[in-house]
Image: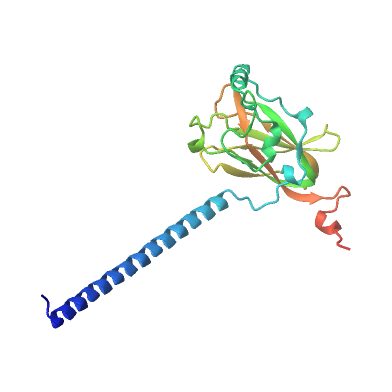
Length: 241
């Protein structure tokens, strides 16, 4: 049987052990919090890095939400594979093909593209107003996220034309190459000098990266300065009163 002094000594010893355990637990909690904070910071930096990589700091006048649309009469026909269409329809899936309007949307993920037959075709975009075009941006998912693991259906060489209101007169604005080995988001400076404002722009695809049957176009952005129909820029004619 313990004497009173032995009992108090044992209680004191257990109390010290509990205090040590509590201190160790507090240290572990702080370490976990630090690791979580560091991880969150790394994740946040990675997210912002990805956003910055995908963000073009220019107004997009080929965006459907601001009024852009497709001139279907002057745009190539959609690619149609009757065998694939029959396969999907048998299983009651929606039509696998996407219309050309998809290139005016910000949702760029594998398969959400407009495909036309072969390696040559064109799309004519009605811009959101008359625009003094300065740059064109093409976007295509990188091969690393493609289901087939390659970028052969990606546009390669292409030309850009500004179209006047009569739809007959075209102004050559440049010929470019989309390099699949570079960024999935590439901006090309147009040869619009002296600057002219166009209500439409034509993207003419001249080749792809080797796909024998079709070419996929994911997103097109048109940059520049919006001009009023009278020839004044929008910032000048705006009157809040």
